[in-house]
Length: 241
Ligand SMILES: O=C(CO)[C@H](O)[C@H](O)COP(=O)(O)O
Image 1 (spheres, rainbow, N blue to C red):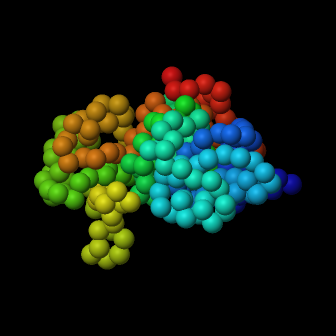
Image 2: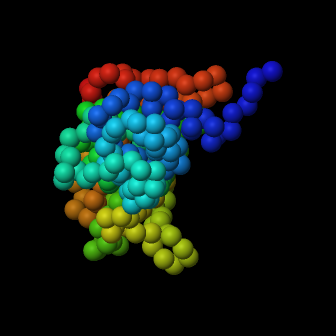
């Protein structure tokens, strides 16, 4: 009889497989979200057993969790170069391109990943897609001129042939969600994103856009947990291509 793993058990299995690559003395980026929380939890247990690492959290949520587990923490100002970041994703494709930001931490997650030699993504198999875009793309925007920025995004994506709805993320009815950096998030449901690189460039060119959830050329390996165990795509040893 084949045991059925819950989504949570799969997330933990992916986190455990990534943790096996963490070595003494490493400077780690610590991701955000329920899968990354499993990693931080497992890392905390290893730290209790004597593993010495230093972590840079990608959100206040993760900072609080890691602090509570006794994981030594730093900032990118004190530790500007990291060995490895471990984070979750909302979607990924076979080219290791990601959509992130479902948990609202995409800006810090991208800064931390870009400061790392390697980025491991941990995910359950449901996050794997042929073409990115089933998950609405989070776009982080400055609060100043938010309505104008939104109109600008609508014009740009229409020009790329993408049609869909843009929804401002809320934390409660009528209360905009505000990121750790003090910005708003627009969730952009465009459907299939056939050319993520082009969309990324066009979004970055809009002045009010602080960042977006397309992570391209950052992930070096993805640990995918499914019913049959954990499969790895990418390269666990090398840096970004
Ligand atoms: O990008 C993120 C947070 O900004 C998360 O990594 C992403 O939302 C996945 O979360 P989860 O592991 O809870 O499914």
